[in-house]
Image (cartoon, rainbow, N blue to C red):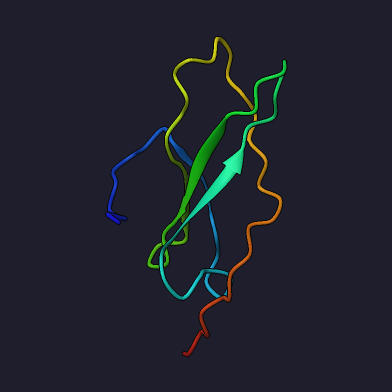
Length: 81
């Protein structure tokens, strides 16, 4: 995974050191449905920078859908100084 994006509109937030995964990861997440649809998307977590990106946004939705981050877990890398 390329973690060296410039300013990326998909960037959600950064994890601080000590809270980043050992390796970069991809997680499948559910979008909060406004109707009966249950669309899925992806969350990318970059181990080097701690950047958390919203992956593929479903283009068939007529509204910006919130995403659910519940259930994303990983073992954080050990921080050595």
